[in-house]
Amino acid sequence: MNLHRHPELIDRLASAHALGTLRGGARRRFETLARQHPAIRAAALAWQARVAGLTELQAPVAPDAAVWTRIRNLVHADQAQAALARQRAAAPAPASSSWWGRLGFWRGATAAATLAAVLGGWVAVGLQHEGEQRIAQLQAELQTQAANQTRIEYVAVLADAQGQARGPEILVTFDAQRQRLTLQRVGGYQEAADKSLQLWALPPDGKPRSLGVLGEDKLLQLTTSAEAVQAVPALAISLEPKGGVPSEGGPTGPVLFSGSLIRSLSL
Amino acid sequence: MPDNRGMSPNATDDLLMELLDRIATRDEAALKTLYDEVSAKLYGVAMRVLGKVEWAEDALQDSFLYIWRAAPDYRASLSPPMAWMGLIVRSRCLDLLRRQQAERVNATQELDETLADQLGSDDPGPLDTHHASQQAQALHRCLSQLEHKQREVVTLAYLRDLSHGELAEQLRLPLGTVKSWIRRGLEKLRGCMAQFA
Image (spheres, rainbow over the protein chains, first blue to last red):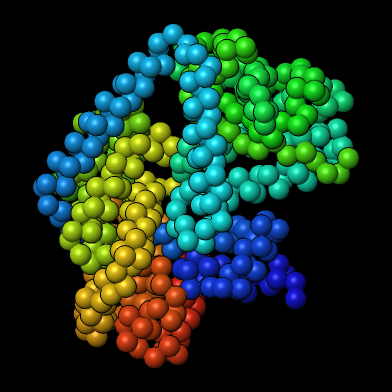
């Protein structure tokens, strides 16, 4: 049956999906269809928003005063940690070896994110899950785009490297023929006035190589040789001093966004 | 606690969004003001999902720390502020519930008895539109057209992320009964929500 020709049934499934009572194979089939058909996806999202209103309608209960004290203490600890991180960022560039430690951490975080994605059903409610869905959706759309426009050979969706609840931040496409790397800002991240975002290729057995520094524009095009991109499994964006840092030393600031570089199979 | 019961949803949203913007700039006083505004509402959700003071306090604490950290991302979510915060609390509560269930299978038995009692009474579950977004106000109007029992199972299914089978078990009702209450409840909701679409 062509589900997208039955708006009434779509609405019924979307409401049960949002409530969480649509389970098992029926849930998976509905989600697959929602990924394929914008109208079904729109119905699902509309019902998610409607049903979420249930959290706004519960009777208030006053929490104990001690809860705020605990929250305040945690926030103070958080701010102290952030201040420490800023101090470190302001310090002179560390030797590249110390950055490797962080790369290791980043790889660990990616593995954790993959595991989280595998356990996706379990994460269900998490905002992270929504973010992951958006990333998967964009990856699929980009691959379709890449398939239609044979000039684009590589695509990547860069998202928060720490696996926090965030969606895609930067879309990258690479046209090998024209040696053109295009970066598009799609998230809300805005670096401070004295900082720049720098794009790195992360080769499997080598140091990260700088591919360029992002300006303030939403869209950026860089000229890059195909060799610099070929056989690179992943890209990352680090936060650097204004204007970026030399490629040889590797990134000096934190890795904010990262993602796999996918080669279009249609060529 | 400041009382904004008389404020329109838009005025409430504006106030909460302004606070979230300030929190995004690491304004701790704004976090305290937000806490005074919405902690009772969010704690009400946590109590409804978890039913236990100790757990609900942990969930509220986690949620506010999350709000503090994620406030810069709030605008991009395109959600009304209370809906955004409500989802955060529900998500934290469900994480906590799953951890507890993994550690101790019968951890929620006590809670289930309270739930079964609630459902047995004729008292219409108190719904509260304080701070609710326009969308939630619409949902409220539609929910009030449901029978008490339908409204309860629909609410519990969502807030506690329960399947038909889990609901039947926890509420000690036949599976068929739970299924038909949910189905009829959702049908009525769909009919009613259509006019707000």
